[in-house]
Length: 442
Image 1 (cartoon, rainbow, N blue to C red):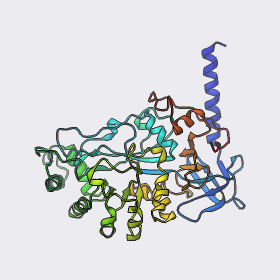
Image 2: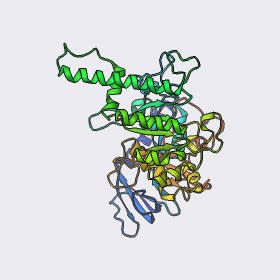
Image 3: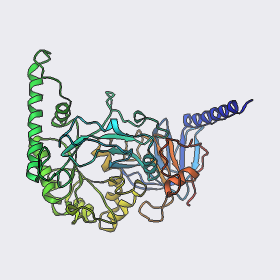
Image 4: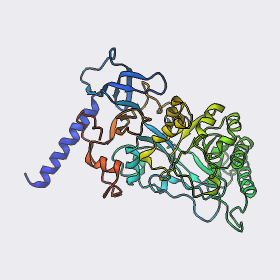
């Protein structure tokens, strides 16, 4: 047997072993299980099979299927995979400098699925992510919801589809200083002009929608196809969520005013001064995805950002989630956002909910991810200790029943801690051989 044949045979054997393990149910036993949707099970068992959660319950009474791969997780904590509602992993770029509003741009066409930033997100326990274009425009294009599956070589490997086969995503809007250009021109020169330009485009979209309705399917009466207007019509019909980058309290109120005027669904992103208008946000029933960073600075409009944003929104009754804005917050350290929020006064329950289920709701994925419930996708993370402890490590990350990160694997460990070779974007992914062991606490 020559060397090439031997290597091929070895790889096939590994693939066969992995496939065999995937065909069998997997049961994690004796773990502390944080379900998010219910009570924490101090000594529990979770069974997964074919990419889905089969059952979650007390280890003493759990029924483990015959032939299952049983993994003893004594001393470990298991919780749902983290949902990052605002990230820039994959090095994607959106709209260009030709105009301030470009709803036809699809970030789908600009993501490197082999980027090491995706592996860093896996190391941080992130399993679902909303990849956004930048915020230098009033509308910089359509976002994309991704599952961070293992071994992706093209963006199609990461897409999330609805029942009709359409890939899912929202659309990115912004206000404040990012989109303002000195001297105006095509871009706004003031905050008031920013809002006026957005209104103008939504009115055009309303007219485009009405012309299509009036044509009643008659091709001769249909207006010329307009990809930008099509995207905005989806917003007007509440089929596409607006993820609105906004910081100052007055900009937050402008975003809410536009959402009310045109009746679109909105998720407020960043909301640095949410603590100033928390009651108004709650009254508008607007979800807020906040960012908690240890070194604020670099932008004047964020001067009043406060760690108390989470608790202020929680007390007001608003839905609160978290995001990285990677690399503003490195995806590997996303989980500490919950700890910082709790330190500032947010409840433990709502902070962990914000890392998981709240984000799932904001992305319309709450029936699939965000909690450990039977029937949901088998997206989970295994921790060395309590998720709010600074000493806790993410040991493993699983997406749809497959291990995508293992801290005990030397290559994955390098991604988690950094060092020479950790930022390799060649697209080479380790084969995660299933050995039934949970990585150590290093």
